[in-house]
Each structure stands twice: as structure tokens, then as C-alpha cells.
Amino acid sequence: MKALCWHGKHDIRYDTVPDPILEHPGDAIIKVSACAICGSDLHLFDGFMPQMKSGDVMGHEFMGEVVEVGSETRRLKVGDRVVIPFTITCGECDQCRRGNFSVCERTNRNADAAAKMFGHSTAGLFGYTHLTGGYAGGQAEFVRVPWADTTHIPVPPELSDDQVLFLGDILPTGWQAAMQCEIEPTDTVAIWGAGPVGQMAVRSAVLLNARQVICIDDVPERLKMASDGGAIPINFEKESVVDRLNALTQGKGPDKCIDAVGMESHSASAMGGMVDRVKQAVGAETDRPHVLREMIYVCRPGGVLSVPGVYGGMIDKIPFGASMNKGLTWRMGQTHVRRWTDELLDLIVKGRIDPSFVITHHEQLQAGPDMYKTFRDKVDGCIKVVLKP
Ligand code: NAD
Ligand code: ZN
Ligand code: ZN
Image 1 (cartoon, rainbow, N blue to C red):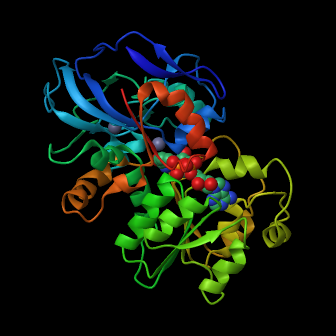
Image 2 (tube, rainbow, N blue to C red):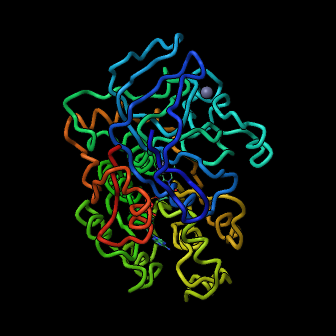
């Protein structure tokens, strides 16, 4: 079959690879009808994630039709139409029973490596580093889904692929980011990043009745999309984020802050340069705003910092003393996808949210290598790419 494979930093190829086969009785094979490129794929593309191997099949946001099931698969049959959550979940371990699906105790087949790095293992993920199991991803014609009974979301035929595809990742990710803020009707919610995750967080915060939603980025078409969704845009290249946020909140600061950027801002900032007040306040060296530092500095004391943005390794020069003294609450993590998808599918069915608004590019899978660059460089108006095998 054909698949998009990782061969090193900035090197994604459209390769021919062996078809996946059933490896366990609980597996299913899915014929992929649509898949997307996620901001997390860009961290692999940019070489920020350790333990990738040449030839790894990319992709963790995908859907399709079941074409084969293992002998112990009970809840799936050939012909079913499913979206696959990017977190592989057993549904039975202590964490799964708590709904903490992204830290499932059983699905990471490299649990020892993960535990060495993190202290504990975390769930297996599709198309991601070998620290999370190194499972072949869904930017491919076919994919093997382990623990298939609990690692799928059934979707009704009347909804299009574009309407349901993002149930596997960015929609619940934006939703969880907002839910973790425990939004009150008086809240101002500030969201850093107007990429696909930031867009979903904006719509979620609006749906959850925040008084004021603000979105920060420097890409005009992304800010325009956030503003169409009900957010006040701030372009960090054109104005001081901290000053503007203070002005919009009578000097109190946003009640809730969401980092939908992740290590892109940290990696860029770590390279040197400076930004005025935040720099002075925290003594940090940045040439672009560093999201975590800005959030800590500007958030209302007693507020919440919600971090769906992905980080790996060590993050230095974080003003943790400010965070402690202001009594901030941190919420973060890979998304517990399956925890949220019933209510989100219901919102899609009722027409209260249509996540397809974010798609700017539909292409064939073979255009994938070019589309990684287009998405990463934010050229050609690109906000979200959907690929069809
Ligand atoms: P993206 O790269 O398209 O979006 C990031 C956006 O942040 C871009 O629009 C960029 O211009 C903007 N940005 C960069 N530096 C900034 C700064 N200093 N201030 C404000 N904005 C800045 O990616 P995405 O798909 O939207 O993903 C965003 C993050 O969410 C990534 O880190 C991704 O790995 C992560 N993610 C996490 C989960 C999860 O389960 N927690 C799931 C999906 C994605
Ligand atoms: Zn993702
Ligand atoms: Zn589990």
C-alpha cells in the first residue's frame, strides 16, 4: 500500500510499504477514507521528537471503513464506518476506567522506554514516536487498529468525512482545553495559537459561554477565522499581547489561558532575541513571545492555564515562582479523546458545531510531502489539510 513515511527532519515521503495485517485477535484493519495533518505531526517533521525511526508511517487523525476484524473483536464488524481516536485505549485499566484514556496503562508497547522518560508509561499513539509505542499511523491506505473494540468512534452515514474526521483529535483537543478551564459566564478566555487546535478551542469556549474569548497569533487569515468564530484577535507581531490583554480585562488579566501553540514557541524563543515587558519581568531571552511565560505573567491570580500544546523534553526559564505566588492552576495533557466524543458527535449531529470550517486544503495522499511544508510554513492560506488515499 501507499503511505506517508518519516525519514528524518523535513523528510516525509510517499512510500510503498507492506499492507498492515491483524497481529492480535482484538485488532481491526481500516481502509482509510480521509486523514489530516496535525500540528503534532509538525513536531515530528521539525525533528523535535525523539525516538522516531526511518520509515515510520505518519498520521494520527484518520477515519474509514472496517475491512477486517480479529476473532476477539466484538463491537466492530466489516463495513462499519469509524473515526479512530489518536490515543489507543484498552478501556479496562485503572486509568481508562477513570476516563484518562491518554494515559492508558496497557496500550503502549514500549512502556518501559516511556516510563524511563516520564516516570510512568502513557498510552500508545498512532503515527507518533516510539516512546508512545511506535504504532503505524493513518496517513496511509490502510491501518491496523489495536484494541479496536475501545479504540473507535462509530459515525453515522449522513455526516460527511469532513464533518466527523476531527473527532479523532483536534475537536476534542480544543474542547478538552476549554473544559479544563471550567469556564464561568464571567470569564475572559485567552487562547494562544490560531492553528487548527486554537480554532477548535475558540469555538469550544464560545459554546461554553465564556463572556469574552481572545485569540493570539501572527497569521492574518488564522486570526480572521478565529474572529469569525467569535474571538477578539490579537496579532503579536503588531501589538504587545500583555498590554492588550490587560486593556481588554481592565488590568485584571484573562481568567483562563490556553496554550494551543506548544513547543514551536519555545523552540523559536530559545534561539535568542527579546520581547519587552515579559522579558523584563522574567529575565528570559526571546525574539518571539514565549507562550508559557506570557500566560503566567498575564493570567489573573487564581486563574487557570490549560495546555493542549505539545511539549517534549525540558522547558527552561519558566517563571514558576510567579505561577506559585499567583496561585495558578495548570491543566495539560494529550487529549482523552474518547471521553468527549459522544457529546461532541451529538453537537455535530445537532448542527451546533461543524468542525469542517477549518479545512483549507483537500488533496490526494500523494501530495502529502508538499502539504507538510505548506501547512508548516502557513503558505497558500493553509490552516488545515485533509488528504484522501
Ligand atoms: P499549528 O502549528 O498549525 O498551530 C500553531 C499556531 O500557533 C500557529 O498558527 C502559529 O502561528 C501560532 N504561534 C506560534 N508562536 C506563537 C506565539 N508565540 N504566540 C501565539 N501564537 C503563536 O498546530 P495545531 O494543529 O493548531 O496544534 C497546536 C498545538 O497543539 C501543537 O503543539 C500540537 O502538537 C498540539 N496538539 C495537542 C494535542 C493534545 O492531545 N494535547 C492534540 C493535537 C494537537
Ligand atoms: Zn494531533
Ligand atoms: Zn487502558
